[in-house]
Image (cartoon, rainbow, N blue to C red; front, side):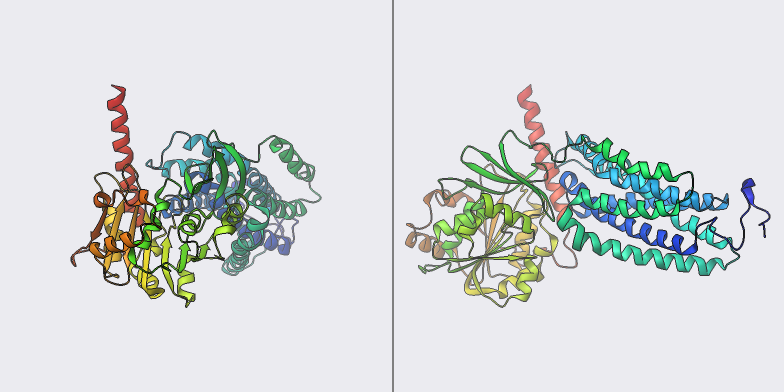
Length: 534
């Protein structure tokens, strides 16, 4: 019978047909796929944003915060629509519009993000840019999807059903869909299809359900035309980003964790990520060394007089193989194991940087997880594990280095690359050195003039500078002189004398120290630039 007291003058609904023509099972299906699409879009958005903003905790907090705001707006709007008595045609129309917006999101987002980051440096706060980019690219999808649950609840409750039971059932269905939306992109679509097609795939599924719900209505022709029109509109959008530098681009690949490029400039071959912001590997054809911090990992040979040292080398963060190339040239009999979390970087390194010639065994996975599961012992463990700007915090802590120490032979050494050392701010470097000093009996710092990188060495056995100098003298024909000629000025022992402040698994604010140092570095550079311009 007709429902009375309908606010806002909305049309009457029949109790036995609560969904205004749509069966409850179809509304439940729509709720399921809407929940799936929300999570799929959120996960794919992290990949979409990573080349421009990175993947740090600050980026995640900005992105998740913005997405939650969009959903909250949708929840409120959906409640208002439900109160006004709108039916299933509006519900399916909303989800169709959301699906079109989701399919367009990767195409709309890239020019927006490129414009927002065009003049930004690593020292700039990108949180406002992240929120603006999320609003431009994702709000048109997530706000409509936020309307789905309250509007669907209102529609189904018009059949005189218990509101709590209806809402509980819909939230359960939506959550199950969200679970699917968490695992399907990570395990299936992102590795096989990439970011753009992941957006389009889940948008297409949602669109199909929406079109079924609109069947027999005057909205169906519009629905059927929506996706061809979208395809036409985006056909001219370039699918690949332009090269970041005036170099020859040899290859590019959207990997699981990065947008990566291989470029060549003269004899130099470089592996760049995130539109050229960061260089993960570099080799110089015809030379063993790379004219970078990577060369100084070879100073590990100073820690033992044995001719076969290091016999077994583990590199955490193998990337394109540049570290392995340096070490294998200087210690050709060493067995090198490389661990890298991003298989796409290994593929590019193998094809363009000769990785297979210098790494005897490749393991795909997290470096700490490998140390935990492996019972092998190594003479040298190289830690070169930057993720964009930051060292992953779980590989900077006392607990991590205790684990690493347990995987060293009695003569073993850890070599740890720490970037972003300011000329007057050693906070990050000092905290990392404090952490090593809390675990190892001997710690040394190798700074590099006019460079932001520093290599920390930590020995499992106690050793002093006199012993290192003797070992270096006995191995002078192996270790290149250009790496040691300024050791007196740039190679020093380190001790916190028990007053250190090491990172722990519970408290390791690596991002905070990194950002503070970066701001100081770029502040100094800008100040110098201004003085020169005067």
